[in-house]
Length: 69
Image (tube, rainbow, N blue to C red; front, side, top):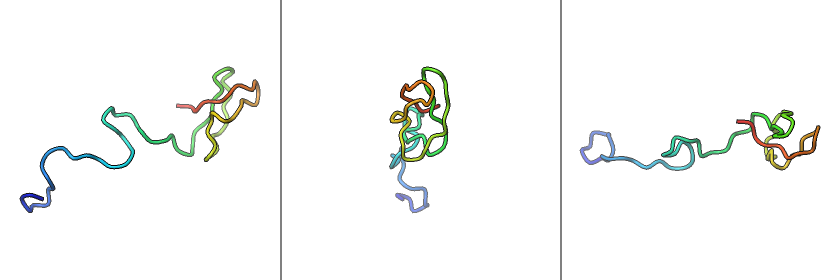
């Protein structure tokens, strides 16, 4: 606070942690909700927290799933 007015230092600040970066893309994970989708047949299954979609196989055709979105 160079002027003591509570505005903080002048110039651009640098954020901490994860979130929206310079590119405007979300740098964090997709979160606990959503679906896992089969790129082969399009089957969707609910995403399970703590289990990456890429470690699951499609229940219909056996291809590895990907995260929707």
